[in-house]
Length: 352
Image (tube, rainbow, N blue to C red; front, side, top):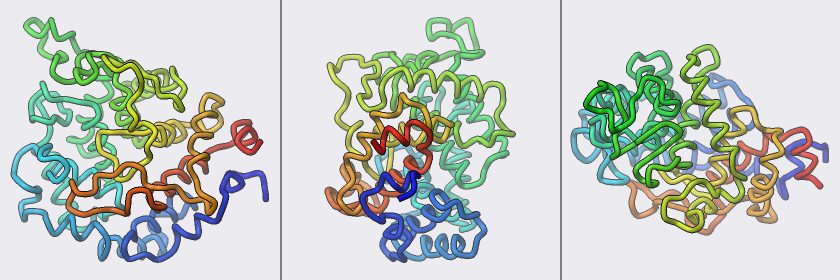
């Protein structure tokens, strides 16, 4: 077999992903575009996207939507997890929903109008005190995937997300009385991904989600703030071995086990695989610091080159997606998204 990323697979999992599948039709769409490089308007991609809107989880999620664009109840839409509005926009993007559908577009518009705080970012409570990078990253990434790049509201959210990483123009929480724009102790509490959920230390889950969004900003639209935030995010995520994920921890003595369980869909929890997805998307597919992370990914494939579903929100969402412990088309797709970017000495090392 040629010395390419496909040589890392134990079986022909790509053909499995390209099968027509009424239960998981979105997988075929992403396999065509993200793995094979097909153009979004290619006939087979258009056909696959239409299939994702006709069967599988997307129609079930959309059937639960209120005619005004929200899910469960009006407002910010962060709770209840994982059936409210913010989560549905995040999940619909991951599932390959089509923005051309008026229900999808309506949900995106609802989030843009109701889930942003005064500072511009997405907030779990609609106020500046509820700005958290995991939520902001997920929603910015989803809306960019849905084609909202250039929308002033999304641009404002992306600018806030970037500056919340670097601290540009944002004062410390204790200066709130003297500075109109400041961090809050209740959410992102300082630059460098500091978050109340992690004892005001840098939160790697938030960092992965923030970089997920910023990696999707087209090169020609990356402001100085976005570029600076990407540089800071790469420094942070590469400061530890992705395979061990021993990023700053407030009270725990070891990393969360969720890091090492690959799942789908992805909420605020992340895993080693998504960290690698972000890092290779930002151009580090040949970085030797990813070697042990790639080894971890490869170790989880079965004899057919398929990856199992290890983490799931089944029972908490509008529709269950695949079966925990079984080979997963969605997790396998995620793995191939990473492996197709592996090159150079990193590829040689993985093949050794």
